[in-house]
Each structure stands twice: as C-alpha cells, then as structure tokens.
Image (cartoon, rainbow, N blue to C red):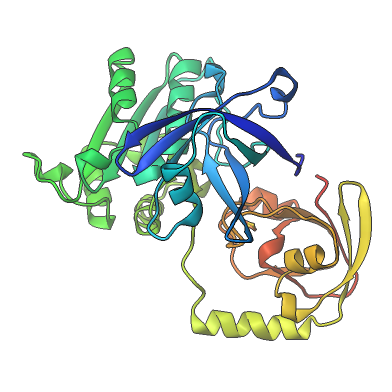
Length: 358
Ligand code: FES
C-alpha cells in the first residue's frame, strides 16, 4: 500500500450523538482508486496540534458499495484530535489522510450463506457497521446479528441508521442493544458486555458453532470478554476478528524486559527499504523501536498508534530476526509471512533486512 498522505476536503460533518460526529470526505475522481477500501478498514489522519504531529486512525463506517468515504469520531476525554474534530472541524476544511488499510476484513461472497455476529462497544461500531452493511448487501442469503453495548441511549452512534437497516433486512439482521446506565425491562439487556453477559448471550441467543465469523470492536475489556468466551467454547481463532485502537501500558516486568532487549540491540545494523529507497540504520536504544530508529535516520516510515494495534507501521522482515513487545495488529498468517509491527520491534540479530514496500 501507499504510505503517502493525501489532502482530502471535508464534505460534511454530521452530529451523531452529543459527543460523536461522522465526517464525510469529498473524493476527487483522481483519488477514487487510492481510497477504494474493504469493509472494516481504517484511515490514518495527520495533523499538527500544539506544535506536535498527531496521527490517529478512524474506521470507515460505510460499505464500499455506498461510494462514500465516511468515518465516525467520538470525543475522548483529553483526546486532542477527537476533540478538535468534534468541536472545530467543518465542511470545506482539509485533512491529510493516508489510503485505507487494515485487516479487520472478511472475504464476502455473493453465493455465501453465512451467519455473522458482531460485538460492538461505543465507537467500536464504526468498522462493524461497515462490515454489517457489506455482509447484508453483498450476501443476500447471509444473516447478521449485532450485540451493541453503550452507556446510555443518547450515546448510541448510528442508532437511526441501524434501525433503518433492521427495517430493510427484517429477516436477516438482528440487533440487540445493551445499556450500562439505563434499566430495560428485560434484564439480559442491562449492564455491560462483560464475560458473564457474553456467556449468557452465547448460551441463550446465538450458538457460536453456527456462526461463520465474529467481528469484535470496542473497549478493551469488552473485546477480551468476547474473545475469551468464544475461545472457551472452542471457536477457532481464524473465525474471530478483532479490531483494537488502543492498549494498556506494559507491566513493569514487560517494560524492563523490553528495555534490556533494546540495550542488547545497541549498534546492530539494519537495512531498511521504503518507497524504493534503501538505507542502512544502526539501532540506537534511545529511540526504543525500529520504527523510531528508521524515522530518526531520515526515512519517513509510516505510523499512527505506536501502540502495536493499528498495523500502519507494518514491514516485512526479509533476513535476520526481530522481537515485538506486543502485537495486536497482525494476524497469525501475517506473522508467518514475516511481517512485524516496527513500532514494537527490536532487532535480535545483526544484519536485519526489512522492507515497508509490500
Ligand atoms: S503504529 Fe500502530 S501498530 Fe505500529
């Protein structure tokens, strides 16, 4: 994929809830191919805020067949980028955006007869909505069930759109809302999507064995609960797709082990290719990761979260060995194919050869 940023003009900013907006972009003909996306993918944005370059990923919330490019942004307490988007961004403004990427995707097929189950929490609905719309539009014989958790009804993103989809796909879409701070008549729908709740749902509402793919995106504890409950029921990992946007910090022991490994890697030589340009870089532990070493050496290697979740910094190791502190962004297949998250990577051997051009 191309790691270049393109300048896109905002066509519309629409308030979805008191603390979330959707943003639709104008797509000039010349950029249509660059911004063609798969359902579930996200965009990386770049902006200078307070003299610092800030990058953030936001998922596309529409289906590719809609011919639009639109994201959903929820305002996070203390979040510079999300606050700016919610409070200041308006139609006509321009933003630097990288081409769509990400692997929270499924190979939909018009002839398929599949059952899908989405677990979404809060703004985690955005990629799940894209996948849900795509499954229903592209696969006329497939069904989708959505479990959607929120604090209260006023904060539910895309509530009307989801209700319209339910009307349109009466027999093939089931939606269940779960509210933490409001009491529903049926107790099952009260409270958060924690492990006990997910276990209850997987016993009473949906049989995991009948489901072809599970799409999970939301707060960390909700995603962990859903994943653990599915794995405990013997669901293969290949059927569980998870999209994370943030992670917690490393434990003290993990951080100490990472620092020790970085010290050990001091001076190891790497050969790095980006946009056809090859450069020799020597690992400096003060920069902590291969990504930051490569950038410090002058190659504009791509990144967004720097937390091991978005995979924007993905590169392929051609020779030598590297170790990753955490990996929430690569599939088992990608790891088997030699990909690493360079924001999390430290070289283990001298002469590592890696390329961002894949
Ligand atoms: S920058 Fe997001 S995983 Fe490395």
